[in-house]
Image 1: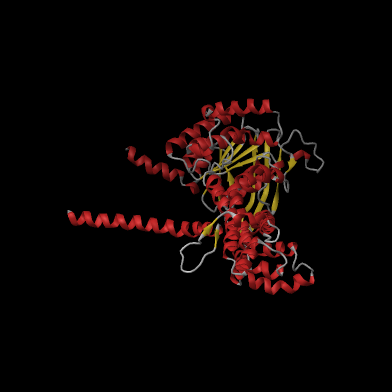
Image 2: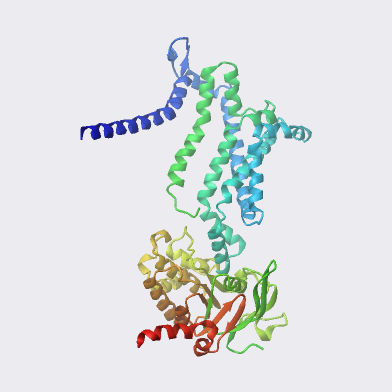
Amino acid sequence: MEIAWVVHRKGYDMKKMLQLFFAISIVFPVFFLAVLSFGKNWTYPDLLPSTLNAANWAAIVKLDTGLFQSFLTSLCISVFVGVGSTALSFITSKFIAYSRYRSIFILIAYLPYVIAPVILAATLQYYFIVLDLAGSIGGVLLAQFFIAYPFGVIILNNFWNHKIRAIEELAATLGATKRQLWLKVLLPISKTALLLCFFQTFLISWFEYGLTSVIGLGVVKTLSINVFGFVNEANIFYAALASCLLIAPPMVLIWFNKRYIFSTDTVS
Amino acid sequence: MMHKNTILNVSGVSKKYGTETVLHDVTFSLQQREVLSVLGKSGSGKTTLLKILAGLEQEDAGSIHLKDEDYNGTDGHETLGRFMNGLAPQHRNIVYLYQEPLLFPHLTVFENIAFGLRIRKQPGAIIKEKVEVMLDEIGLVSHAFKMPQQLSGGQLQRVSFARALVINPKVLLLDEPFGALDIETRTQMQELFKKVSKKYGLTSLFITHDLKEALIMGDHIGKIEKGIFKKYGSPKEFYEDEANGVMAEAAFWKQFKA
């Protein structure tokens, strides 16, 4: 009886420890990053910076750091890439899903990830230079679109299943025109899938570094480019600050995700 | 020429997928207010036939004509009714109901039923009136503002039926509509369909693989097998056709009577 209780107790402790380990492994880096962003004067072997104040955060609005501008640049690029690739991949995925060559198209959609975005950028860089797109926001947008668009198709491909097709057909026999079908049926029932696709493609764009640096030629300063810039300069406090800005939108998206996606009942 | 009571005339309709013939020279007509039960096994071509009639699939050969009082024909087929071949589903006024109720998950029961009226841009007051009549007809007045996820299988099928009925279709195509329901709910749905069908004078093609259901639901019975369609003149004729196995089935049960 006592042995059984000890075994049960140990199992319970192990469960608690794993839960704690999981929570700490996620929260600690974010917490430490936030602490570093307030830091100043960190000397070895101290565990934490000797000074903590909000002076670094004031640098966000200072023009010479370029943090706020790069935040806005990143936000604009990512919103454009997210909205554009979601919209186009929604339509494209429909034609692919109902095509007899569906599996071939989906296999092709994985190719940009097999060869890695940075290699793709290096391969296409010549054409971006010829078209005068290298080093421009338009060029970075287009390059990131090459990565986000197939990913959107992969995400949304599963939305177009047998049931959705039957709903489309039924709506048509009830008298819905193609426009009404899209506006009154397909868009509302795909809301969850579209939001999910937007979040994913937004995040791909938001964290993109290699492809952006190759096509942007260092001229287009996104937030991820800035973070690596500060890291290379060994400016750890500004790097932490820029990283805090970098993780802020994804955290908002996670909150949004939880609040809207998991609480909505729609066809998926 | 189309008989004055004929609403749908199907003549020589054929369909092939690759080298496989799915429908072979299907010819029949439907009279106004007629419910035609069609028996068919899986892969017999019954769903393809319904989809062709609804305009969701394209036939390879043959013609389909639908009586339409509002149609001032100029296509040379006026005496046969309106020529349906190539006409998009949304212009046919033929509703195709699947085995699954397929309610729009983002709309309430009320809005699901109102769907066909809203896209026809009918006035709000008329929509409200018509939908309320339908809700009463299917016994779901108290469920009007529930979402489809809150309804049972039988209730979903009722709403699906009301959603089709409210737009007053020329022909209703039902593809094993009660196939997924339990026996009790199925019986209730059969009774409801019979009652409403009679009241509104529905013309429908009712596909089933259940012999008893075919006999209960249909004014006439047809059979589709390997793409070949046959419509029987009467239930007796259907019973006496040895190929259907009805007589053999009846004989089997009779032996227990003695």
